Image (cartoon, rainbow, N blue to C red; front, side):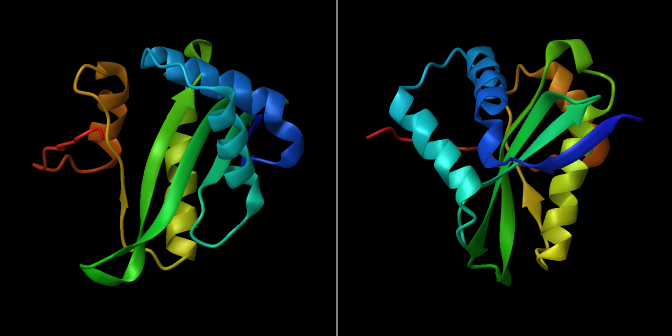
Length: 149
């Protein structure tokens, strides 16, 4: 796609990132306090080892999508693995390859880091995203359990 740039989230991207992440959270009917926004953005832009990283999809100069990912240890390999936690594209650009480009950029970051695996979760009802995921990754048989404390 011409005019598309996938790049790391930078310190001066906070307003654009905040708009995109707020829309992503709204899709999942979630509202988070300001403290979480500040903490998350600081983590994404801090550059610390074993800290979350973020990517923005910028189309013709306008941020239209984001991805948040994390490298972490695994007991099943000596290398880290990569967890893609959040992926979002503005509704008006869905179906144009933005999501795929963001995922492929995470794949490239993982490959550069020697990471053998990128994984993520989505909700079963997220049919639009699952059509993409079914084309570019393998659906596993794992079920997620969670206990909120």
